[in-house]
Length: 340
Image (cartoon, rainbow, N blue to C red; front, side, top):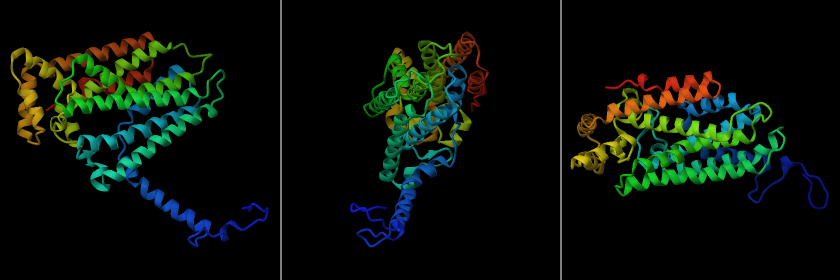
C-alpha cells in the first residue's frame, strides 16, 4: 500500500483504528459475511427441481447465447428465485420448504429478509455487468440493467396482488389471476428470456420475440396452475411442504378461484368460508378438497392442464422442435401427478 506522500508500507503490518492489521480485519469481515449468508446456504442446501435452469438451457437451443453470458443469467435467475422463496415463506407463514423447516424459523425473520434483499442487489449487479461480458455486436450494454429492474417491479406487483387478495379476502377473476401469474411466476422466466434475447446469436436465431414470449406465457400458466393443483392433490407435494398448505395460507389459487366461482352460481360459500378460517385441520382440508371435487374443479383443472400441455408441444413443433423443452413439458405432465 502507498500513502499520500508516496511512501510504501507492508499491508500485513498496517493497523486500523481498532489496532487490527488489514489481514486480521479482512478475516473478521469474511467471518461475518459467512454468518450473513448462512440462512441462504441453509435454504439452498436442499436443491429444488431446477426447472428454471432447465428452461433457460432449453430456450438457448433457439437463441444461442454464448456460454459465459448464459451461465451468469442462470446464476442471476437462481439467486432471485431462491431469495424470493425465503421471503415467500415469511409472507405466507410457511413452516416447511423442501422437506426441512423454513429458513426464518431457524434464523429469524430479520436475518432472512436481510440476506434475501442482499441477494436481490447481487443479482442486479450481475445484470449491470452482463453487457461487458458479451462478444455480441450491436448490443446496448445498458439494456440488461433496465430489463432487470422492469421485471423486478412486475415480480413484486404480482406478489403484492397475491398477498392483497389473500389478506383482504378478495377473490380475483380468472383474468386477474392469470395477469398475476404472468407477473409473479412468469416474471423470472420472462426476465431470463428478455436478457437472453438481447444477447442472442443474431446471425443464427430465427425465433421472433413475440413468438417466444407467447410460448413462455403459456408455459408459465401451465407451470403455476399445475403447482396449484399439486398443492391440494399431489401426494409428493404434501410430503415436502405440508398438506393443502394453500388452504392454511388462505391463498386464492387457480383451483380455489374456480371453486368459489362455481359456488357463487349455486348460492353457497363453503370454499370461501373454509379459506377464511386459515385452517390447520387436515379433516377440514380434506372436506374442502371433496367439495372442490364435487364441483368438478379437480377434473376440469386436469383437463385444462392437458390442453395446455398439448398447446405447448404444438408450439414447440411450430418453432422447429426442441427436445429439451419437450422433455420438460413431459416431466410436468398432469398424467405424472400422483394423487391421493
